[in-house]
Length: 391
Image 1 (tube, rainbow, N blue to C red):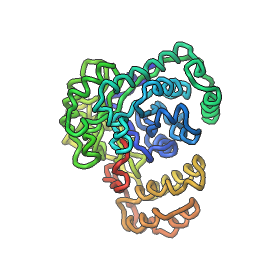
Image 2 (image 1 turned 135 degrees about the horizontal axis):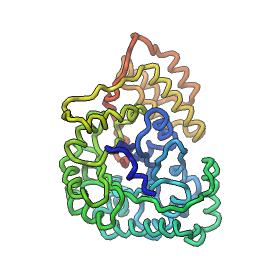
Image 3 (image 1 turned 120 degrees about the vertical axis):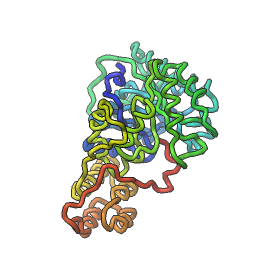
Image 4 (image 1 turned 120 degrees about the horizontal axis):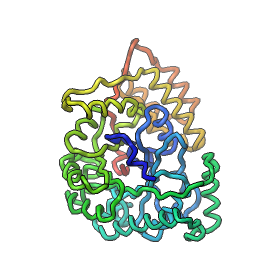
């Protein structure tokens, strides 16, 4: 079942970001402003098939996140064949292959954006993933596909923990690709043509090359050229890069003709970002130009801190107290755009528990001025440490 064909247009989804879009973050997003589609953090196909169970944490999800797509990376077709079967068994709605991560450790190994330099290998990974999905849909068990019984038990346990019912119907999953404009320079036409040979359901295109990492502005003119190339092929094209507000979405869709967008860094500290996305569709179907703007909703400071605290509590429930340090970056992202935010943010990077967080918020004067509100289009900074994150 290809869920992509039933999503409203333009599609407005949450982009995968390594170390950021974990199961807790995605659940909070889904609760406060559900995107049309969500992706997991990327997971190496070797970890899916053979690594210790702890490495499968990135494939945890809850039903509220649907449609949820598992993103995988690697450079071994045999492992992609196996991992695709696991993705099916775990109940995901789709499989996405990361061909865009610019991290040196990933790209240098020939994975992520490194695949842009080896289009034949990239195509073989898509082929292998599709074969694995087709064999699983045809009734092949994981053991018959090549998994050891102990690994199968792990997948079964993950499904039970999620409260999932046993698979009653085996259906093929759509395969998509997330990539970039090129390696050292923009070669988007030649690269997209290679991907189209394998007929992926969706190509998500980040508007920078690997060499750019996350520096400079995303090149939406190159994304527009790719959209023109893809149109009529049956493959959808989503644009990604520098989307900070709903006005950006409406403008980019109108300018480029993409089928939708994925939003990454613009969502950090603003899980309600997707809440009024219907406004984008209303504008897209009207005669007004993108310059007319949208009446964006606002969120009170009280609500911001309530969601911040909810996020922290959910994180502890899912990952435990010892992992709380991973929440600090999220707490800092919430502290933007209001009086004395910098002072509060400096405390957030050292907080070690929900109790300490509650104490800090209590001491902070959250109502220094009545009626303080924060706009959805607030610009959100990224720490330098996230420069190598894959989105």
